[in-house]
Amino acid sequence: MKQVLLVIALLLANMYKYLDNQGVILYEQKINMHRRLPADDQEARQFIPEFQTSKMELLFNKMESLFRTVEEEEDEDMEMESGGVHIKMRRPELTIFRNMSEKRSVEQREFLGKKYLVEGDIAQTPWKITGESKEILGYKCQQAMYKDTAQNRKVVAWFTGDIPCPSGPEMLGSLPGMILEADVNDGEVVYTALKIDTKGLVDVKALKAPTSGKKMTREEFKNMVDEHMKQMGGGSGIRIIRN
Image 1: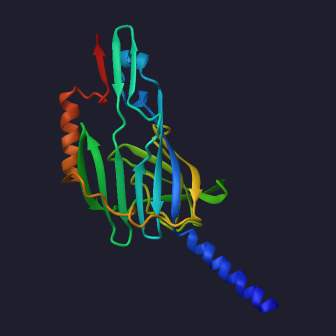
Image 2 (image 1 turned 135 degrees about the horizontal axis):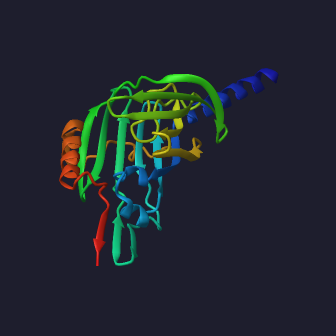
Image 3 (image 1 turned 30 degrees about the horizontal axis):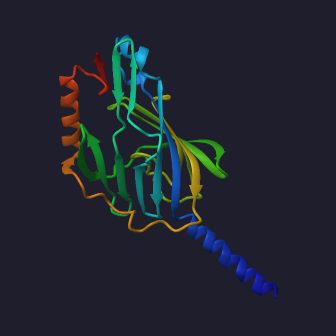
């Protein structure tokens, strides 16, 4: 009888281990909008909220993930009007598919109302695991960080080996486990896992690369965005319209 119970316990343990190889994670994305404005643009700071928060979700199995925008009823284009100034901010749609075994990614990004498919390889990020640890939503997590001097970018992430998929929010990943929390540039963008569901089955039809949009390389897309921002005088893409 004891042997039978032991076999059942092992089977259940293996089943739950398998379920942690797939699931859905709901993240909060918090962006410091003032950090993205030109330093001398004090006018915009008077009308634009300092922080913009939204929900994102990550569908995953052991070697694939799909990060995408979550549609919310209250998630409408942000419009404010005060003192004859009309400000409109629109959150672009985003979908990022990654296949870790093939080391490739397909990003569906929206820019100026048009969709683009940005394809490329998954870069190996030079993470440094610091040795610090904490618990997030019941998962034991380790801290890792890296600095990209070329892009002037610093990232601090917390990942868990209990979810072995080497993925995370946006294009963050390449760690021995799932990233549940990330801080980019000391609070400019912060991702925080709000809910983790590893008990249900992931929609196989949803966990696929997006196909709609004009195909571009990362370099081509970056050059297009940079050129537009240059024409706008280095602005943030936020429109201020005087009535």
